[in-house]
Image (tube, rainbow, N blue to C red; front, side, top):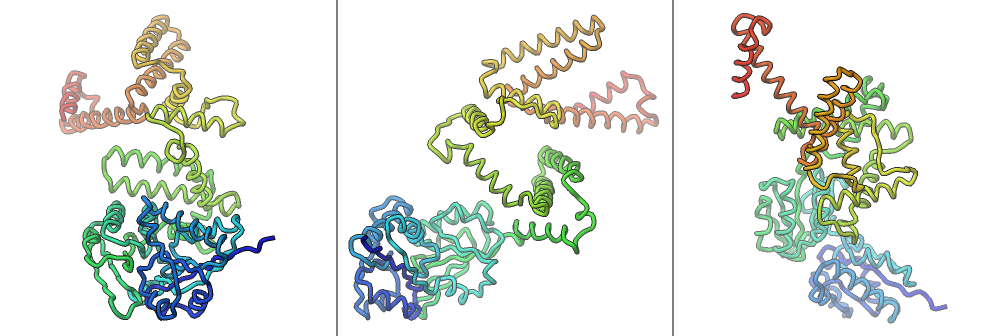
Length: 481
């Protein structure tokens, strides 16, 4: 049996040649085949002094269209060398355990290829940065690779270190991404050559000037202080405290059932904030609604059923699974295509269900009607256009009038419900939320009624003291206002 080959994953330190560990130096001197991710590193002076031969892989960057492709190529090049040449060393700036994508790929793929890995750690750029700007304790610091832009917005409550922003172009992309939650004047500190005794440069600029710093290169790291003082971890910690033995008596008494009215109330207050058009109110009410979610998750965690993280993991996995046109190879060009795909995936998931359709009686009647009609439409049971829906309203109105003329109360109730159901169907074709439309009309009626009441009171009598024609006059005034 052929013995396993070995890849030594070596850290070169943050830059200063003296930061290279004795073990790393000994490994690089002993192993015949040494590969460097990049030759652009001050620590290579020591390799030259000890006449350590190496192959720099900068050329792979030039032959690749994306950084992901670059790291894949580097990883497989190093693994192929290990299979053919025996032990090899792959050396990277800083520590191999910090933001080194090719190292991650090697560690994942090497065992299946019959290759073992040995990590030779080193001082990372984290230690050098901590010394330069006095970073707080570890749990308050997040390290992000500038080339993984989907992670740049994950830590607004933490001290953020952004590495591998090699040039102004990458810095510009990072700036644009950060700008969605960080204000333009948020301070950004650029440190070039952290840990070096010479050639070190530091400057702090507002975010909008981040890509205009003249010395951005492979040795530059960006630091941003938190943009918000508290995050979801702090929120969960407060909730645990409130429910703890020394917490709030009221919070400790609640359970899933006692919280139901508050959940519904907060949901409707969110709708009210949306209708008001106030971003400040909406932000506050969404926070109140989130409190209900976290409250229920904390109770479930105490009961041993699930945690907040289980709920987050579940909805994240569901979103990915039900959007194969985004995260997979499926195709969906219209919202209608998406709904049909969603319903089919949902049916495939709920194997215990015998029908595509559900009648959720806990919903208000208008919402229930809308949801059932959407399900029917997704299954192909629908009018081809809004003409059929309008005709159905006319038909149901005539049937209601007939029932009224016959003074058949049971039939009147039935036909009135059919008319409302038909009207909901029209609202769907018009892309109008029936529940919200009715809520808006009710609000409008209330405001006009209050105006009439106020006018009547200003005249010295209540509404009942005036004729209908006078009340109508004030009503028309209210409409104009």
